Length: 311
Length: 213
Image (cartoon, rainbow over all chains, first blue to last red; front, top):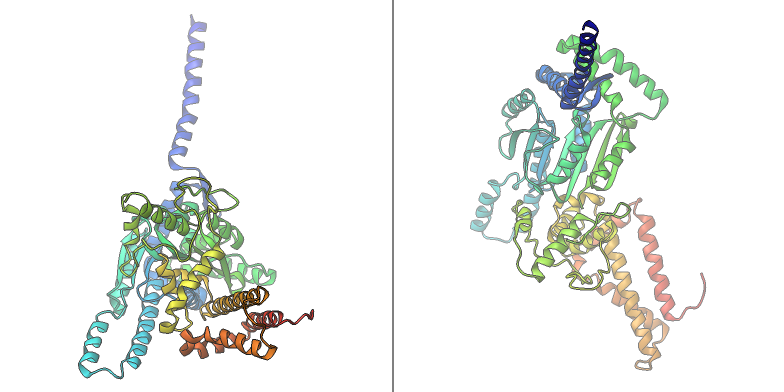
């Protein structure tokens, strides 16, 4: 009898044992396949959670840290991005992961100055009109200082959007600006809506880059442009060594001193190393359906701007 | 929609959509949902315009389609051709290219495909003019061969050819100085010079010059 019971118990125990790993893998399946967070290996859900927390904690000091880490050069990179975009008045821009609004503000400034130049040119041609006609044209032009251009700033993190909105108020940007909470892998917008899609220093933090690229393709109008500004790989070996030294020794320390957060900046530096290099990202963008995909290295590859068109 | 995304050659979405739109025009009026998606931008033109220039077998009523896709280059050529009509107003600039892209139903951001100084637009125009000139001279030569016209003396021939070529500039004559200055920029000189020399070669060829250099 005991011998009879034992095998049953043994079977039960084995089944129990079999169930446990099944539960574990089911948990793993629900959480998603393995991916990386910096140099750690985590599941996709964990990664999203961790990244959300990183940006939640750095949101208030984000701009200060950017300036101190890159010695202010990030401003030039962002200027170059908007210059490359060369937006004309009437352009509809979607800035994804645009949290604190850097690209959006630069876009508005650029479009405003282009519009002013357009108006000046038109005025020069108006020199033979009557006074009344000229004053009428002033009125209609004044109401369109941006010329119908609009920028939608989309970010997954509420804290970053909050900081962005405060900055906009502080700097006096009001018209042509919208703030939307959304996930780059699943944008809350309709198809064929935007002229330009930008993602500046954001795509590195997206867990499924291919999904984000597909979403970018979806929401762009035919003829629309995809622009991605991101840290990339330095091919020059000497520069690469110096860059690594700076990244791993200086940046986390700055993070601790200025923002009180060593780990977030450790993550940041590691995530740069884990991000695909220029050619690989170019291939991924082409896979999403974009044409004329190209990239431009800034500072010998520390940063790269990738561009593609939906044709 | 018959466009197939085969791995080696992908159909361009824009041309596919334009084809879909013209299909809807030619067949019964289908639901305009795809057209409404275009309407999102206030300054976009109605997408119901036929693409510029005749394209064979769009309706696909029967038989084969000659082309299932167009290359990026062909689309770029179409954009530049469409942009030419905006040159008198905007000059040889990215703005003119953006307006041209809009008439084809594309976003003005497509102008980013081209250099921002408008040089590609000018080179496109120049090569178009040269092609037209070559066709003109070819026709004249045929007429002479068929005996319908007299063979002109060389200096008269050259004068007429150059005059015909210069007349093609008349619609753009106000902005032509701007174009010339852009063509003289160092990075444009190789292309503009080669267009010039090949045009001269063509003229001399039709003038009867048999030399091989």
